[in-house]
Length: 158
Image (cartoon, rainbow, N blue to C red; front, side, top):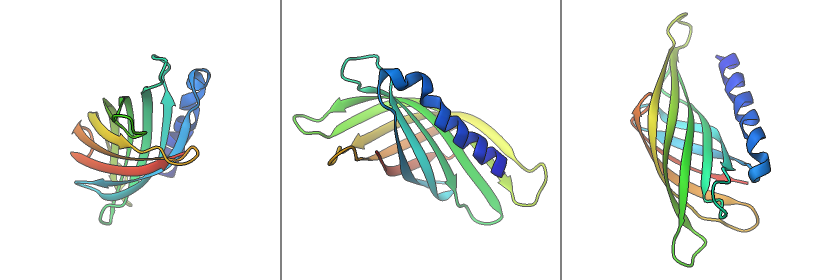
């Protein structure tokens, strides 16, 4: 299990390498509350895709390790493309998007009990840029297949 988590963490660190020239990737933390797996802690990577001058189209990648009831283990990897829309003259913006979800579940101590599923995400969120480079966010992510059915995530990127 630890090797899977390490492999996912390395993949998240290497993912923005090709995007760095188009904009500065941002890393942060998040807390997720899932319909089927209780709460989870995770990492988030945001990288502008450089498709528009305003950098409002981004790649949002996240890894969450959840804490379901024992003896179960559960984690998710999500990769979404989102499009931001400013709210009037404020600095806040809403975003919509979608992408892929990879979910893995297993039972502690049961060899061969793991299952990995792939599904689709639909994402809707709110970004609230704060002082300096801190940007808190909150997002709702219905998942179509793969992992949980509904996830509420909040966090901050730097």
